[in-house]
Image 1 (cartoon, helix red, strand yellow):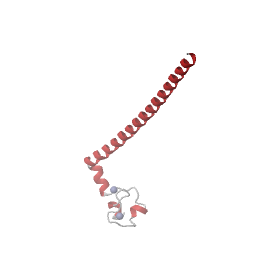
Image 2 (cartoon, protein in one colour; image 1 turned 30 degrees about the horizontal axis):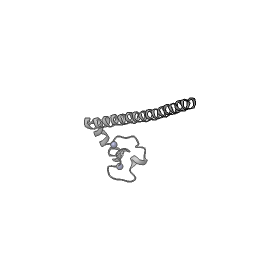
Image 3 (cartoon, helix red, strand yellow; image 1 turned 60 degrees about the vertical axis):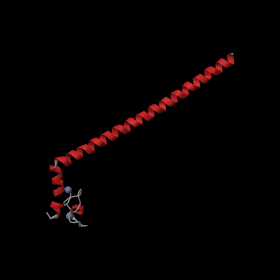
Image 4 (cartoon, rainbow, N blue to C red; image 1 turned 120 degrees about the horizontal axis):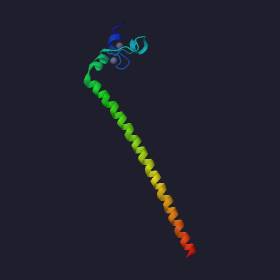
Length: 98
Ligand SMILES: [Zn+2]
Ligand SMILES: [Zn+2]
């Protein structure tokens, strides 16, 4: 394994800024570099990743709620429209009878 094999990875790129680093093209795919190792052992980083995941889940939930709310308002508007139509029809009927 070359020096790139222990210092570079697909996620963090080449530590030496090498354009044809073996991690991009070679069989050293899937290797873990020093940064990967550091991340895996850093509780603060792990926490930030977890937080980011939770934020994503929260955003998805909020988007869903917003969507449901929009649908509810649309239904409400439709219901109001139908009710208005009923009222108009009733008034017309009364008028015709009267
Ligand atoms: Zn490299
Ligand atoms: Zn890495």
